[in-house]
Image (tube, rainbow, N blue to C red):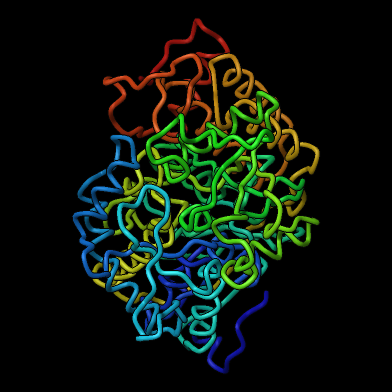
Length: 531
């Protein structure tokens, strides 16, 4: 095990285990200090986390003329009718305090000559309320600051290179995490009185994604397999403007480019968004992603044109995107950037309350692996990093208040067979291609049933617990998408193109219910238990 080096490592109290080394996990650990915690991370912290790749910033109503009510209204509008308003209000109300926390950790948010924070506008925001770092480097800068803080915090122990595979539970209470060294090896049980899942998103369930490889839906799969309720799994956000150069993961052209006036055109040079939505390029992501998907499907191509709006300032204002383009042989100063939608964010996840508690005692969750209800059916730009810091702080505060320090716990071998830890690459590829084709930007009943058939087939041959988590999460997404016979937010059914009042609600589903939906779809004589 790669433990953080320190003299008192043998005395560490292991009763709080955080699974995941991204923004939510690190912020939660820092918030818990000086209470000792252990972070299990699949990759070295600062790597393998979507947070570090985030080009957009953090939304917060802190500028003159803006308000919490305005930020809330924009969040509700983007969420397509299923946002939990109380949760969203908590999130936007806590935003200013969390920005202050990040400044205290040394995050160098952009400032003007007067020393004031520079606020940018992004899609579906009515005000300029997004703080950035060097235009498109917020995620990397935030993570660098938090990683440094974690390494300087003696109450935090790091175990890097271990992938969480299973949650152990007794009498409805989470008791530990089974983890395995990445690349194979014997599994180890880490007993815990409090477990915090912060494992990130689901990007690598899809063939085209902006997420790092570690984002494979592990937290949702693990939680569902021990009976936790999952919320809104069908709502998957596809970022409209991934740079279409055949890379995996796909590099991202940040939404801030469109906020600065960049336009979307097809191969004929037509601005197709003008006829689709009054906000044109600044419409909510689901609308823009579907429009781009339509242009590509029709063979007209899709491009992000930054030549007039940004032009020669591109290298300085958006250095990350500029380098992505140059690496691919594209000069964004003088030519349009080819783009395509890519899986970017999951609005669904482990159901949690305002304190990060799941429906399983002893199990908290925060960040993208959760579904707090703050995003509804479609996340508003730059609310993801905000949600991560707000609810990881709330989870930490809840643990400190209601879970007194416990006895020292030590990791022990599980006695399980070590073989089969790594998924079969061919099976993973088949799953990812299936999800992109059948559970992607646009869905229909035939494709969703086909996806459930393939998932069932892959489960029958599965020897890897890690891959079983991926398949479990894929089944939950697909089953809920099949059950929701309407289109809303990030869930678009070509066979049910309109929204239905009967579905003007969130989805709450267990793995048992998802299995029943799949069984009914694959064997129509089985009675459905959902919807």
